[in-house]
Length: 176
Image (tube, rainbow, N blue to C red; front, side, top):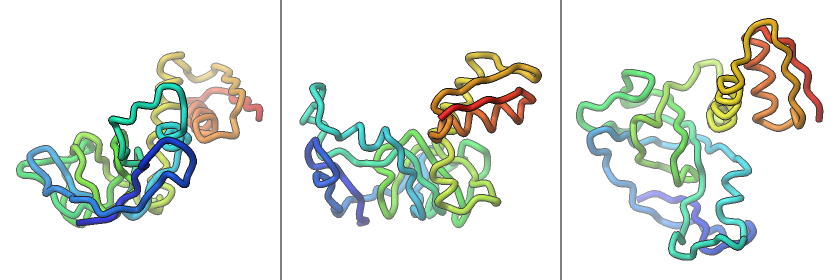
């Protein structure tokens, strides 16, 4: 048993509750992570904010799309997405539901080795914004020598676009 945050209704932060949750043992292709930090993104809040498309059948909604932590258990014959993986390894995971938790069991395909230079809070906020930025650069085929202008560059995705574009050798301009 572990604790996790869930949205019990649609609305503001007052709809969140810290509840007991069963954490299943990992099966084949799954990993249990002891969460050290959870990423906080606008998408987390938007999922339970009151709006015209709210579907009460999804409640209670487990909050949190990305985490950083330590592998607590691996399912049989399971490797994490970046290869390998053993109990005690520091990892990060994203594109999951329920990351605002003490422990979580997730598909191993969503789990990657944590970069050693990052602490858990920094790692927990790396992938959702970082992969969004990376996909933007991929879709627009940014290459060395290109000029990239990002409006709204003060947000997590904008900052990551500029950093990644610069690493590719592009000239970067950001507005905020």
